[in-house]
Length: 281
Ligand code: GLN
Image (cartoon, rainbow, N blue to C red; front, side, top):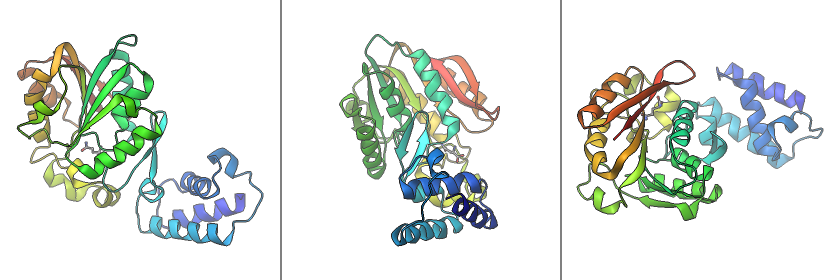
């Protein structure tokens, strides 16, 4: 398979794909149902059916459809999540929010968590898979996103720990639909300023849902509303963890401090961008 890996890798690099070798390995591993480590060592030819599948995947990738949206899964934190064009693909930057949340939750007690804009469910479900005592409510305005999140809950075997709420945070009856108060609120809301959407990477702009990206004129529209609705939903001493876009951390912290929360800390991602704002009630 090594030769085939080289060939796929070359084809992808000619189409200006960033990590052609890595992707070639992921594609072959998907087609051959072998781990990425094992696939290079396989000593066999692809069947006609596998070759056809391979060519179809390469064709879509050459048209710059993101690989995770072609294969239908994306690795995040410790698990593989089902993704589609109805959900934002999980990003490695978001893993620090999960790590921080796990540190702040109590491990030997029932803990209730709300996730605003759950999408694929990657944040909430990663938390629930960490501890069987923890319970979650995933809120999303998109029923199609919730369908994907439900499938992921089944994959991670945490269906018994989660409820799904098909509402937005601007809905007047949101509070009634939620079981509260909770110990923690987490959210990666849409935060790209509307005028920046056009300059996003084609792969993001064309394949991640606009609903999960567009943060209004200054990108902070959703944080303002989440700050407004969160206080009555959170226990005294409870935490709120928010992912933010580049240069937004200070302003988001201020929005929440004005709504009565106290800033605990701002955590940077691996690229040294202030990415996660943590506050306490
Ligand atoms: N991190 C995503 C991106 O830059 C945006 C996610 C969001 O708006 N919450 O592509």
